Length: 473
Ligand SMILES: [Fe+2]
Ligand SMILES: [Fe+2]
Image (tube, helix red, strand yellow):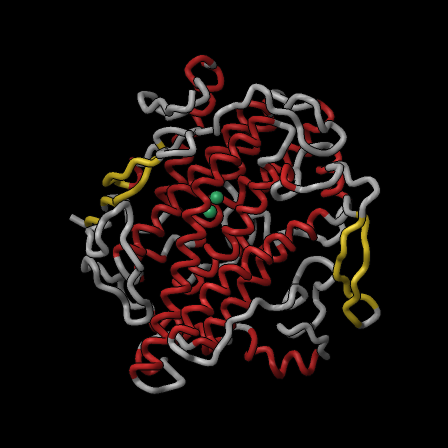
């Protein structure tokens, strides 16, 4: 059951061959997908060989196989985590009932919307990152970028499969739309704001994979609780791939921080910029930006939509099964920060309408662990500097803090103060120009690193750091 059949045009572990109509529909979508990859996937990469991992089974252990692959030949397919025939719904009004194998009629529109919103983010990030290969700091990093890209492509496949298999004609139309909206397109943008921003440089890329892919982890984890079992199983398998994306961001930022510290020590200077490394205050400003736009992805602090998703047993909380409560939330409350009458206040909101906020809080806790790891690197060099997550009201465009001026420390500011100090807290035009100026042509000599990043702690798949992770031939 868990093994993936690679003898088919569309590799899968859902016995696609037994449903000819669905198989034909997906085979008809496949050329459009490949065309999209060629047009808007990583630019100028169609002939090179990349040492990529491909899923061979959906088991937790040993699912990955590594080999050189030309990316357009990557075997994108449909892989769901194994079905637990005993699985019961863990939350909401349908708690305790057997998980649904078909879409419940009354939840059809809502569920489709959830799947489309998740699916739309996947190809968006590939589009956002399509030029980064030209400025990769090493072959190791180039490979990691491409691994993230092909897996985001596969995540699109995961959602498109659900749309085709369970939502009839509407689903097929939504699947087509996924390839018609594009990141940053003024006429047909991607659905969520953060997925229309550009990812113009590698500091942004690592921050994106740390913060924005981590939002993905939390969204997928709450969808992995869904009463609709095929969605839950799709998301469970996607989470195993997502872990690598966050590793790329976490370790990438850590190596940039390390390089900054090395240069500061070596040259006995506060400012590593003249030596081709990125200074810690600039890293902090990029962190502030990517954290705040990613916090917006969790939506309104108080949301009746999210309450309905929960009540309808469609989208749960992070680690729902490990939470010690009634999993229905009709009575309980949850603390929520709000902006009211010119100040930040804490209210006790009905837990049901605050599920977004709870997910955002879980996410912030997780982000903080990463920031703590980066700070350990700085401390190792004895440099008195601490990276910090900004206050959750900082630079927000969605929810109670939208448009309110709040400093990273959580002080409410006048518009004038904000304008005066903005460039201390967010990347300025000069910062962006400096970072872009560091992004030289891709470093393609095995084992070599750009000036602004330390080597990785170790290579991938037990290979040395000098391994030829990408072959240009
Ligand atoms: Fe993804
Ligand atoms: Fe991802």
